[in-house]
Amino acid sequence: MLLPLWLQNDTWGREYWDWEHQVQGESYSEMVPRYMLANPDAFPNWRADGRNIMSLYLQRSCVSPKSMGDVYSGAWAYPEGCGCCGRSLDYAPMQVGAAFAEYGVRADSEWARELARRQFILATYDCHESGVVEDGMDGGVVVAGGWFQVAHPLPLKYVLDGIAWLPKTLGANRENHIVRSSAVVSHVVYGRGRIAYTTFDAPKNTVDVLRLAFVTDGLGNHEFAWAVWGDPELVGEMQPAPG
Image (cartoon, rainbow, N blue to C red; front, side, top):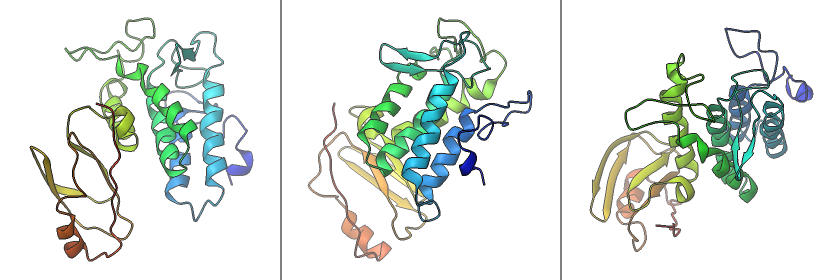
């Protein structure tokens, strides 16, 4: 019942407990499109609807003159909403950027992948090596002083989420990582030129994505995976990555 009202400002709002929040917010602007992406059979218009909800949020969150959400040297920075958070401009781009990253992969949209990259750039500069977070666009503490979960756990979750969907762009160079799996990884061993891991199960259409520091001729031990998973359609591909 919400989609017919997708342009109404509070349709994707009212998510906070500490104020009425009658405007579009970042959580529903991320979670609703991603639910559509994960369930395309239930939402046959997911490409347009998901894109529209995410894009609408970029426009609405940038209207406050106190926040001055904008594109800074090509990188998106915007607050948690049109009436919130002053010059704290990094949390929403990470969260909504992850949705753009997933959309870019599922819809094979270079536009969305590039938009995601531009939303993660500035969001990774807040934390000092000491663990202190300065979330103000111009330096200093704004929201991070009173909200631990947005200063530390949220960036960890969404930066890893961005890497999961855009490992070629956001993944660490010269390192080996399992960045995404639709199964539960129960054990992994990293070695020189080798990654060995097991998953709890491997239902049909399971997808594993790895960022590798080496080139392999094929997929190494995946004959073993074919035998264990019993899936004759198991396929893989290698793509070059920078660094």
